[in-house]
Image (cartoon, rainbow, N blue to C red):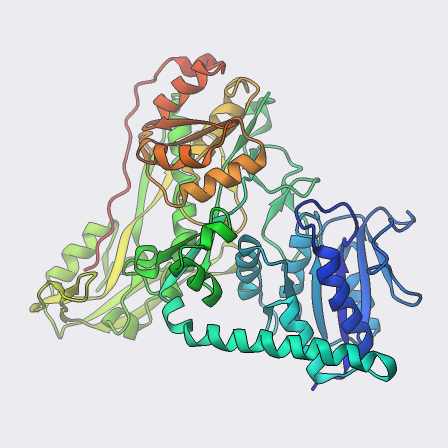
Length: 572
């Protein structure tokens, strides 16, 4: 058991007002009292420039003499406020992190903490959308195993069970201990249904990052990939030559959804039909609908690939719409999925590899790979040349050897074969698509941090067009958009539109462009202040913006261009 003097409770911006979390003082005052009684170190972080006096706070949370109070002039507290130095000086080996999720320092500090070689516990604020985001951050962090998210009540019960108070406070801890037993019993009940809950993913409203060319949109600490503005608001940055950029007169947002494994408690609420009653906008979706045939361990790779493709397609769609020539180059077959137990898996093929040759013959497109595999026979040994991405945009070339099998049966969603096995047809076991790159008339890049998936395509395309034209595309309005984009400007459907609409509404958008097939879903969540506009194409979206007061300028003329379309995925 860790010595309590080597543990610390870190409170981030627990100062009024906090309209998004009205019970924060009641919840955290109990946790603070427990930590102090147990002998934990307590550190207070608050957002202010150095030398400024500490802000007034609730008496139950007020710092005591000897407890460090760290002013935080930036975002993440580890670097900006010197939290790391303070903890190291005290010999702290484990921290409990609690605070205000509406603070500009909270999310960067959670992300920084997850990257440290120190045991981490984050206290939940009981909002599922925040819990999902915390889990995403701490599960992705390269810190020590054991980082966890815990309800404050459960942590109080756990802590009082390890270190009881002394003197007159002991009776108080007996009462808290009894409460803790109840919490732990409820937790045990949740564990019983954990197996069923694992069959679902939970969708919750995410954020609406601003799409901007401003250099103020950047990563603000070394352990994070998230981009934020100086206010702490999330953003996505368009990087284009300075002589091509125009000042924009409105705001444009993309939008994301928080997705993570369902918790046992929310699974029970879902089954009782009460999930949306307690957590507005949250939705449980069967894992099969989220994963398809993708193994859970490869979902992150697929999301990252989809976002990379989305930023690339947005760039091509925008430049072609402006009349610039864009040339397509085929680089190989990008692996988007590796079937477990297949010849490819046994050979060491990984998601995100690019297959460039088979038995020494060049592979330029996914169809080249399909044709090459289908010309072989089960039992044949093949040599696969792959280009594997590494850190900092590096890559390496590897040569792998696989023994092809026969094609297995393809299961349907109900577990019955959708197609029979074919032992005479060679099977490698990879899902691929053509890895494309484009020759552009000038350098364009898009930074989105760790956001994944393909649904930002339309928003990023509009952001590029706004910045590269006259900057008046939105007519001064705050416009959000979701939808996939193809290089020819076709807008495709996306998931999580109900949750995205809530996030967009919270961001203060005036207009939300959505794929036409999902108009009704967005309309149900829009309220009275958010206008929902259905779109099917880039040209249609531009016409809608013009109707709403935007000035298309040179975009009013539709150029004649030759477009390309990304080939579909296949599994040879």
